[in-house]
Length: 434
Image 1: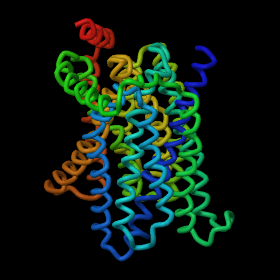
Image 2 (image 1 turned 45 degrees about the horizontal axis):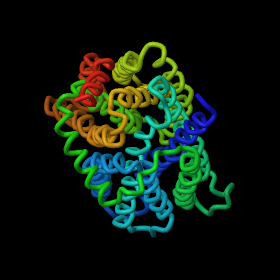
Image 3 (image 1 turned 180 degrees about the horizontal axis):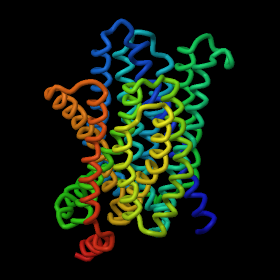
Image 4 (image 1 turned 180 degrees about the vertical axis):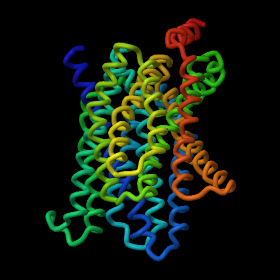
């Protein structure tokens, strides 16, 4: 890899460092709590939970619908970076605006959160698509893993600082923990903006020919999308991979979302859960890089299958957890495989899609990610309802609901087993010749 290529890879990977702070500090920890206790003060807790759920659903649905369309337009206009920074700008501005929302204004907070989520999720469509720009086919495993690794490290560092700001606000000259949370929102926006600059300056994209106007690019993008819907039925390996990904990444996301709730169910304190989350972040940094190296040696598909197997063990192990120490062990195991499964999935997909349509196809990839947050929670809720109907109650119900997530990993693993990377590349080459 040339020096220019190394700079491009560094710039690309640093964007994961930049925006992962939004996922850790805001999505996973501070926003849900602050939304209920500060912006929804005086509102019934169940109502505030429903409002937050609707906000998440609205943002996910919007990105799922528009991502393939925007991706196709970005491909035709050679404008992935422009779209990326358009959505990034929305995310940064809305994240900083959290600081200025008054107490009790949950409607404003929910609307701003939807826009921030649209910015965050929308930017990933084009960020992922740029992987084919900065990395060769042989480098995708390592480069994709490097991005996730830096994301875990960067997100973990700022999250640790933000937790410190809320636990010891006086150290930072802040009057209260609540003010520490508000300032934390602002720091995420600044962090996101500053560390996005390496991608802006170091990643180069082929410019759009001057004779192609914006209106022409949009028409060509929509025409490309129509063509893709016609041709994708011939790309069986892509369809098979997306089906596998839809199941097993839902399992990964469900473990992320439900692990903290499960910790509370077995009696852990909020401080213990913060420690567990930090453990996942900092273990995820070296583990994601290691998974990238493993993927280069044995193949992405095999490495992902190993990760899925570990997740099956996690769901089984979670049933027997009774102490804080055992929960920490589970957090460590999750940290070992979470980033690797995510990174190698992106790398494998990047190698079996048409490079000239990478933004559009990653639009479909991210569409599956957005819709992959439905089955897991429904599976858990259905298991709880069934067991209660049968007369079971208490911790046993929570344990069995976690075990039910293993179904997603098993189905995803079965679909992935039949994915043939070589055949996927051949299907793309055949269509290109045709």
